[in-house]
Length: 549
Image 1 (cartoon, one colour):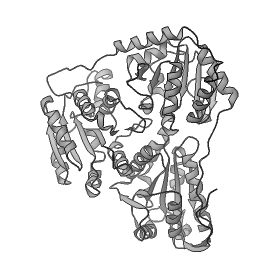
Image 2 (image 1 turned 90 degrees about the horizontal axis):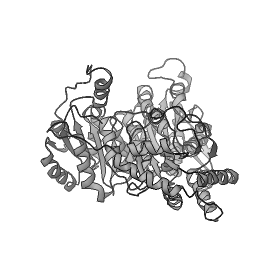
Image 3 (image 1 turned 60 degrees about the vertical axis):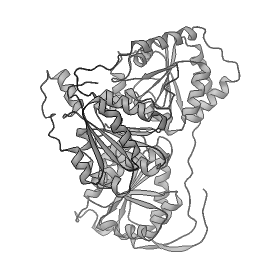
Image 4 (image 1 turned 90 degrees about the vertical axis):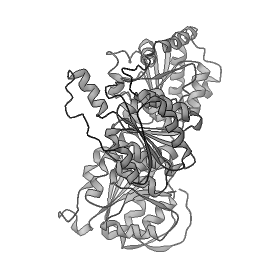
């Protein structure tokens, strides 16, 4: 364990928290203050090393911290008070848990002598979050504080990444303790045993119709570059899960698209026709498996995942590779370069066939003369592709149009809620991304329903002058649910029609520039206006309400 200094000093718990966070590399906290955590906020006020971003809701603070973590690869940090402050974080914690991004969420708690006595704003946040965290802790003794903070960061960042909650009793903030060396956590690297690497590579080369599925684990392990090298060396087809978009160059010939219920025909069909699937960091949840008949994905399934519990969870693996994706793929490339592995000659014909499938992908279609969402998304992509933007989405139809019509040249550029499907994720995630990387263009693509889950965070964009570009696809419905009602409820649109506010006036009330666009000819001028402004902008695109993905 590396240390920053060896001096002995006496610190209060509040000072120790801030000092330890600094030594763990924390430079930003997203939070919302309250009476229980006043001592920590007082310490933050008296220092300049860690900046605090005041969100307008605790759930948004967690989403923003996750957006920060997704862009930087660092651990996001959240600080909230007890009671409702703590419980408001649960949705954000669950979102980060399912998508596998590292967070440490610090929640205030009543004094230790009141715990369990139904004190004012007391909730058992440890029990509440047990099912959606990698670990959680309650600290009632200052002697456990430093070790718990370091352990939490190490847990959040190693293995399959995810959120950790630390519940902090109020009285430890004013207690004092002597401390010595301030320690940094060290990330452990997991390498897959050589024998399994050789077995997997042998099977991939022997197969007639192999395909690689690149998932979100490739993002977390920074494995995109080596995955691309591996796929190019073997010259076999590659598909993405939605969480893996950007992990393989989408303009390469052997890229077939996104798999799953809203994926491309070419991507799903190449899986269906394959005789070997090499899954790298993909969970294969029901959004994917529902597209395939029993056994279609299990002919020869090689699964690489850092989380042992993920292996054979949804599809039985013929070869299991438990390890870090980047390190394992590096070992596979090194092994392939020995020249002892001969590929099946039929793989060339397979690649030709696979690439021909792209011609069968269904194009977007208009159903009226009104402005359509896919036209807006296509226009945003064409206008911004040379800017290489970070794109965050809310959840719904707009999310899927973005996934289908944007081409992401690299990972950590597409921020979306995959596992939880959380409306309200996109705008705070874009805020976190903008705080993390002010040099990049940051876009939030939202639906009118989703924006109303978090529109109060527009204040954060204005207060911190974060130039997030917010594009609302306003169809007057909870579009994805309405589409399902159209398909499965014979058009009975129960509780999905929305009475919306005037989003232009809403943005202007927060001091944010805004326009409304309702025809295709006005889209390009609106985009020019947006990106000429060095400040947050909201564009309300009024689109065809009955459009379907």
